[in-house]
Image: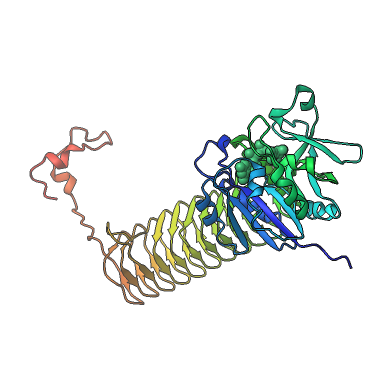
Length: 476
Ligand code: UD1
Ligand code: CA
């Protein structure tokens, strides 16, 4: 059995990312559900890593905080950002006596596949340096890689340092390197700042390392470096294609894929149909047989099996099996919906729980409420949950029904098997198995219109709007 040398990794994440024109450190810019840094960390899965360094500088505290949930990361400060070579020099005190390999990754290269890095590490055995390269149709902006016939590196020249002739070379440096650390340790102190930016370039180490080998990536789309917002958008396009192709292969129907966006963090069951103009984001799970869209946004939410959601927005919520949602339903704030519920048209549900078989079918706001099973919320029912200072809870028991245009002024508890008359404004609790009506009685005055005398429009089929207001004999 071949014993693997120990492996350390270093992610270069100290740069500001000037070309992003943003105060947010570049590696924290979001790309489809993850930050650039999280993407780079994700690409390392599958490698046996002994130590993981992240070189931080600009916005160091922000970057550390964003990555704090991973206790295996060691942060190394590059107080002044004097170049990629200078960034790696910061590891010298931390890796004294380390006999293994160091895999260096630019923090702004997010699309690398785990297999690509595994392959690079395997190809590295016996080399002093192994560099991931790609042949690009438009190599502009990347360092150009020059090799001899055996892929032995002779030089890496940054785009801005290239002569017009050298710029013709379309083989580029991906910003991913594997080094034998004891060799790199000797080379790092030799770096100069003899270049257009007067920085210490990591790429200069190949002048001091042998053998240094270039390995082409299979799919050049993986090595896209993010220096500006246009490249960020380009990377999003690559990710989307990758993610949607994988979903379609796994049996998910995407109707008009170009109009749909799906984060790679989303899990979708079999036989699901995603209709046009639908966006699935974050930690979202869609159960088997759902039909989502057209025109829906689902973020950080879980949907059971056989759910339909039409023109709806579902955020941070959980929906059971076989629910029918929309058109125009908005679930948010940890709404929890049971099985076989019917929600929408034009319904907002916030931070509320709904039992199985409960319907909120038309024009309602349900906030801070706990609804039992088989509750029927009549059209236009509102939970008045906010008194201007605090939010209050509404509780409705199983099988209760609210009439159309009911207002439930919270805090309020409605028992089970209750019926509420249409147009009621309830301010007090209602016990189970009762009817509650809270509205003024209808007053009918027979012949009232006749007493006001003939209207000027009488016989024309229209009423005078002034007749009641202006006649002193009429008492309303
Ligand atoms: C770098 C490479 C280039 C390669 C390209 C691939 C060098 C000199 N050039 O160029 O050959 O084709 O990546 O995408 O390495 N960083 C630090 N500290 C610093 C400077 C940079 O941590 O002092 C980090 C940045 O945060 C970034 C990464 O290193 O994540 C790369 O830096 P960047 O300035 O984007 O290098 P490029 O010009 O893209
Ligand atoms: Ca870059």
